[in-house]
Length: 381
Image 1 (cartoon, one colour):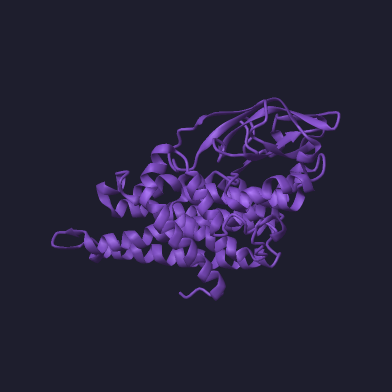
Image 2 (cartoon, rainbow, N blue to C red):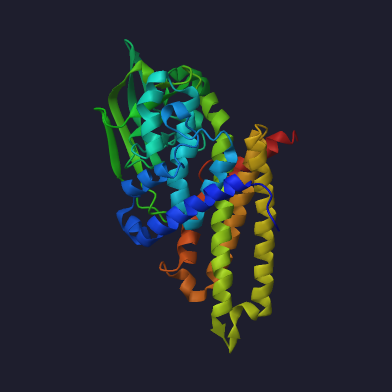
C-alpha cells in the first residue's frame, strides 16, 4: 500500500540519511558492536547531515525543521540499519534535545545546542533509577539549593548514551514531600566533579547503544542548569512522553519492516526438498500475515505521526501506537527467526540480532502493561 505521509522534501532528506548510513555505518557495524558504542565520527556525520539539529533553532546552528515528519523519516532510516542506532540517536535528537530547546535557560541553550547539532556533544536523559522505572514519581535522586546553585545526589540506571554523554537531563526530587509534584529537571554537564559513570551494561541486545549507570555525589550545578520550572519536572516529562512514544513506534515498525523484507528474500533463495521455502503453503501464509500486519500498523503509526506533527496527538493515542507497534514488531521478528530455521538463532544473521534488539521495545518508554493501563483508564470503565 502506498504511503502518503511524506512530501518530496521528506523523501530527499530520508535518502540523504540512508546514503550516509549505508556508506559510513553499515561497513563498520561489527566494530560498533564490539566497542558497545557508536563512534564520535558517526555522531559528527549525523550532525553534518542535519539529523541532530532537527529540533534545534537556527540561532543555535540547528535546522529548525518545525515538522515532525523529518524526525520520523530519520528514525525510519536509523531503525532500518539497527534498532540500536534508532535508540541512541533518537534519545539524543528526538527526546533529550527538545527539553533543552523548549524549557532550557538561555545559558543552557548556548552551551549545549550548537554542540549537539554538530554531533560534538552527545545527549542522554536520566529518568530511570534502580527502584523507579515506569513509576517516575518514585525516583530517589535529590537536588537541594545551595545559594544560586543546586547540589545533586543519586543514581540512574539503564541510561542510553550514558557511557558517552556530554550532557544529561537529570530528574531529581526538589521537594521530597510532594511526590510527583516535587521533581525538577537539570541539564547536567557530565564533566563536572561529582558525576561518574558505571560500566557499559551487558544487554541482551542493542550492543551498539552504549547503556550505563550514572552516579552523582554532591554534584554542584549552576542555576542555569534548571530545565523548566522547579517542582514541575514530572509534568514536563509527561508533556514530552508522547513524542518519545511516537518516535519509538516509528522505529519499531521500520525495524520490523526491514528485517521482514530481508526474510522474504531469504525464503526465495533458501531451498528445501527441491523448492524455495517461501513456496510452502504454511510459510507463504505466514508471510502474508506478517506483511499485512506491518502495513496495517504502518498506516496507524503514519496517522499518529501526522497528528503529532499537527499538535493533536494525545497521550492516550501515543500509548496506543507505542503498544501495538512494539507487540507487532516482536511478533514479526519472532516469525522471521523461525523462517530462518537454525540460522535464525545465529548472531551473524540480522534476523537474530533484530529479534534480540527488539525485545526491549515492549519495556522502555513505558512497558506494554503501562500502555494498556493508560488506554484502559481512558475508557472510563
